[in-house]
Amino acid sequence: MKHDPNPQSRPQPDLDSLRSEGDVNLSSNRQAWAASQIDAETRELLEEDARYFLHQSLSTPCLNVLKSCHGATMTDWQGRELLDFHGNSVHQVGFGNPRVIEAIVKQLQELSFCPRRYTNVPAIKLAKKLSELAPGDLNRVLFAPGGTVAIGMALKLARAATGRHKMISMWDSFHGASLDAISVGGEALFRKDIGPLLPGCEHVPPADPWHCPWDCRGSCSLKCADYVEYVLEKEGDVAAVIGETVRNVPYIPPPDYWKRIRAACDKHGALLILDEIPTGLGRTGKMFTCEHYDVVPDMVVVGKALGGGIMPFAALIAREHLNVAADRAIGHYTHEKSPVAAAAALATLEFIESENLLEHVRQISEFALAELNLMKERHEVIGDVRGLGLILGVELVKNRATMERDSETADRVMYEALTRGLSFKVAMGNVLLLAPALTITREEMTRALKILDESIAAVAKL
Ligand SMILES: Cc1ncc(COP(=O)(O)O)c(C=O)c1O
Image (cartoon, rainbow, N blue to C red; front, top):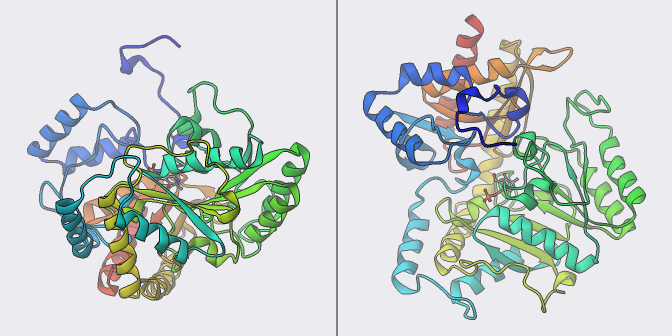
């Protein structure tokens, strides 16, 4: 494709196919929201941002400018407070957690960096802690400065350990934005028109409760899990199956889904890699999401919240039998054993444990799901309400019988809620994904749900 210097002359993209990961910045609802909600000073900052950053559909041109964030909320440049149910899923222990900040500051003053060839005490302590917390013999750890690269390490380790290169992953999945991660990822927004991806990446349908090819209509038949086995058998030489234990839409597979895939992997000599980058470390009410499914993957990847929502940090945690690449470089990132990120992670894990956050998540989740189900009775546009811990999904549809996605209403509800003080992500174009800080209080959750209820009612009246 030739370089086109004039973006205006490019054909308008099909927004629905690009909305799987989140709201894109090309919608007309966004332009209308910005025109009525953004003041002159903020507009100037946004223009400067747009002047210097490369434009891309999930960030620049940006919607708004932030000034501060604390706990479950953030405040924009105009001083408006928002309950943040998006947070890129980093805010397990709340924004600006004082204990995490204290640990970071202390570490910065002592050992701020650790060059390769050396190790350091926070990194060792964190590796030990993660291997103690992770189920089964997930005992071997490799750190990375972000989730995407940790996924890349997992793919490389799977190749090294099996001598195979093929991967099976899910359509609609997200494992990061690099070329290797988008090869196993399943979203058009990242894969479209970008050229050849990694060879040997087979995609299968995810455990999507309402839109799967087997038409399970909200009650999964596990045909999607059986199909993974079918592909494993047909290909015969697959290195690994990689999936999000619970996709952050959410897609919450039924209890036997991962057990069936685990058994199929074992039968066909493939490894199982679970991506828990947004969902691990307590968001589902368990430290690791796979604990809900009673399976031990060969590798699990955590990130996002691991750095306390402040430091970019991720960890690949592998089973003992995968310590097989001593003569290769699987990771090798400059900030691999960052003492500051490790100190932040240790403080994060200590906070989750000492504050009994997992129990809090379970209680708030139960309350929120009950309220959302009542909301479903009030609003015809809500086709489904589902959740695990504090990954709550409200699926908006044009018709409950057909469950046809209502992306336009979802986009409008999101902007209406932003005006009223609640931020959340819209996944797959039509699912309002509610993922607050795990420290959220009952009062804050009640306020957020009221805003959501009012926003849906306001959009329905239009
Ligand atoms: C499921 C999943 N995997 C991988 C990633 C990539 O992580 P990072 O953005 O830290 O590279 C993300 C980020 O959103 C994610 O949600």
